[in-house]
Length: 496
Image (cartoon, rainbow, N blue to C red):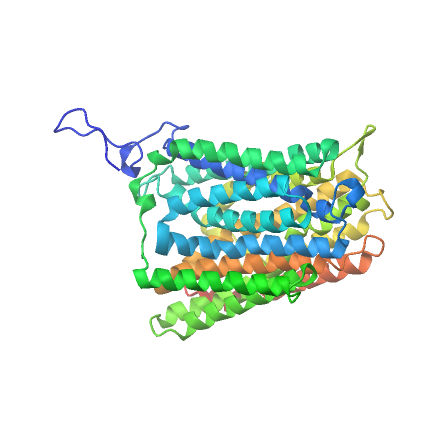
């Protein structure tokens, strides 16, 4: 990017340059405002749509839904969520090899908006199929690149960096908080497609803001680190088209149906994870220390899968629970089902700064990463056990009880989620840094997909065994990590 000058010999600092000292957005570089905006509106549209997705799929046609079997509906939501995280791998690859992170983010935002428009305007299964595929692909591209663009705004060692990321994540949670409130209100008042339409409008606002401000981003954000050759591009296009044809044929011939989409997605993710691990561990380009750290990553990612398999049931089982079991009466007014999805962001906004301050204050005395993973997984299991203490019967569960359970969800999340991606970068061999990050996202993808597959077995009228067994599985997985903390720590070879 060229910079303007005051005289031929005295250049004025480019405000988009990390070294330029721009403080135009609450003391931070002005381009942060545009990244904040596009991420906030993307989260608004994403969580707003996801808050009403499950009930749209299984509500009767008379009530504005598609009338699918409830088990099939929640498994589809899980498969879609798993697809979002799976597509982050594609988004990162496109940024590294084809277009650079800034262009991929801009294109992904357009794809997300198109997906929400499809959900709003296309009727029936066509709208769901086209809309969810587009939103999953676009959201994955945004997730894969937004964080790196924020980092590019700051020079190495800039003390504002952590505060800038805090502002950025406030945008994420603000969108996640407001989205389900507004789309749920529209859905309950005038219909599902109005809710999807509002999600599309929110994404359009974010895209417009970003389109206006993207020219102020550093030139480095358009750089392609490892561009494909011309022949490599042809191969990539060929592989992509072949995959599209295979999936289309499988759908048209009935080999791939809605009821088994989550299971198929899970198998694809497991195969990809195993392939990545084998490739890294068998490589002769990594040192013995790096190989040891990769082995340490294995049990932690297994715990991560268990955690997300339960945590992401906020959009599957908890959605059904809120519809059937929850008393949503507020002084004679029935609260929209999707409003439950705004409870977790409130807790995140309130508690995340406290956790960050606690870890900073404790410094080297804070729990190690394996301990955080173990405790977070145990807490997630305890949260499921807490459902067993809630009064039974249709519409009998008090809202404060569910809010308390979601508070435990949040405490578990704050122990695991903020450190997961950081752990991937710390344990990654130098040669395979990108693939280790991809492995982290694949573990989240698998857990999210399983949240749908497991949710298909939930029955509000016989839920005791469901919550008891899954809670026990998570508690056991967390305890195993805690017991193995010392061996895992040794494998981490100095990484804490």
